[in-house]
Length: 116
Length: 111
Image 1 (cartoon, each protein chain N blue to C red):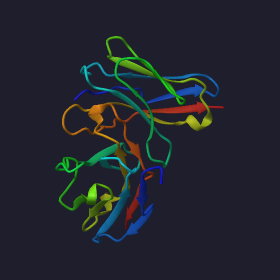
Image 2 (tube, helix red, strand yellow):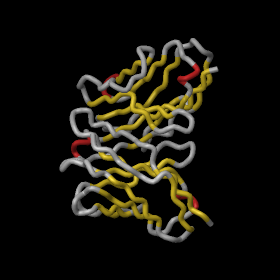
Image 3 (cartoon, each protein chain N blue to C red):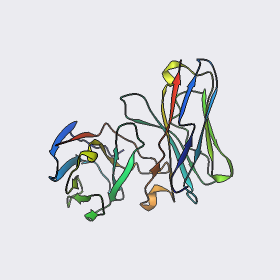
Image 4 (cartoon, each protein chain N blue to C red):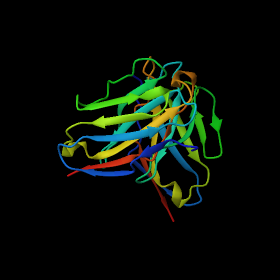
């Protein structure tokens, strides 16, 4: 596809279950980002991948959150033992090159997670 | 980190130009100014970015002051579909290359 693709678009899960959210970046984009946005709140940075470099995990809120990016393309964000406060929209974004080159990032439409 | 200050909300009449201000007085010489918007329940949409010179594209114009301490996003002919939260972001310098979003300006275009 032409844009960043995320799946599922909506997910309802029970408290304590694990969830996986998938992101397909724009083809050829080397950088990939995950953000989350709770209801009525701003965007919160979670993690950043750039090529084969070690990811910047500084935004992950707890050790229940992890992400991987296989083959430099698709990324999966995993939340273990979900809690109600994890309910949010999880947004993935990608950019052709690092932002230091004056590039920009393009967002997907997000995965809406509801923990009940 | 360079920070940005934006008004919480603004109104604009449909068909008129919307001018959204942003202060970034601590910006450093190699930091870009980015503008995104987020329409309700959608992912953020890239609008425009610039370093020193004014920029224009099919969506908007970006006017950056000579000292680079502030900028203005101009939507030349606002429509109802331009109602959104507009984020002004200064890229965080350094190795992380991430964009940090603030609270933005809620632009309400009135009919």
